[in-house]
Length: 471
Image (cartoon, rainbow, N blue to C red; front, side, top):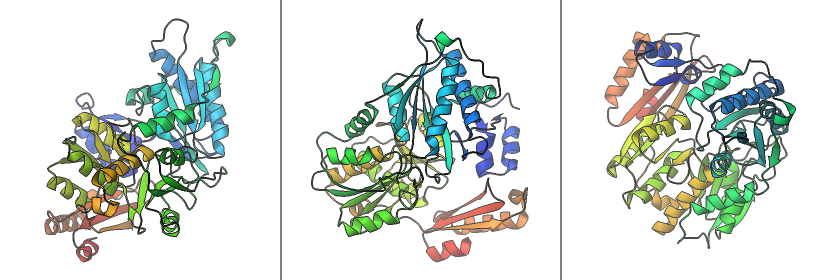
């Protein structure tokens, strides 16, 4: 059966969103299963000091990745592969950066260091500098005591599955340094910050500027603290900065896209026109209007799509299983196709590429505009929303008048490990009853937690009371 399918499922990913029955069902359908011990949907991540986020492991990871790059590269004679390493503002980034650097150099790979920069900045610079790979040391929206390693290809996209698999296979191999004359060299890219700022500005239409707008920018004490404010300021906005004083321990702590209360309060206190919140590595976004209303990824994606649709640029949009049903219905009114991918921006990108579409995202704030960037970028996404506002000559609430998110109810139900909920008659009976009752007006999503013995129940629909009762 494994020889029949072409689609690849990652066992590690499946475990995060479904129970083990899904894996067996995939095998029965003839899909190939790729076992992963370390790589998840977004690289390797965990608690610092605990496996796999230790200096020894990360050095081995760098060495294994370097050997794979050398083995697969086609460099001109006398040249070595070169990788770019960036990080967010976690204190542990210094330690992990040194370990990665040592691993790559031992394999004979040159290294470019850029220091703290957003994840999408590393993706852009890897492509712009024609390097062989980009590596980001970050745990995104997680607390400071977590960290992770994620990779980008030479094209500024997530690494192909076969490359990640090859790296995993090499992690436990002994490190054998190349001869001293062939060791990798390290240099710092001094103008990395300025290059990325200019790139972000280039995604904003030349005929518009941000003069007359007062914008609060919350950088979550993270990687965008010294880039995002400059982007909006140089385009003409009056910028108020919050969450831009990282100390290595305060990333995502009470600020940023996952803690937007500080942004809402600052917008009102400063009588600003808008607020923009990024997360620790600046690849996700939330926004706030002058009244303090908060807008998530579904709403901001709709604002961009509504603007783009006027010129016929939108063939279709990809969301995820968590995308609000109201967005799907709103896009249908605009006669725009919609498809759902598995949860995770990686899967959104994969489906966009499969369908040849350009726009997608998650309600968490990952927004993909592949006509502007190869990966999700909070600053670029915010600029696309601002461009839509300039084009419509209105405010955010007016731009989103065609979208009213449906009420959602989330419940976590404790279950025994391995409980076969998909085959439970009472659960399936209740599911069928609710889906029939809410047909066309709502939906249900059941999924097992990959980290806790819980069954996650999500119901959404037009009527709040009906949604709660159904959940």
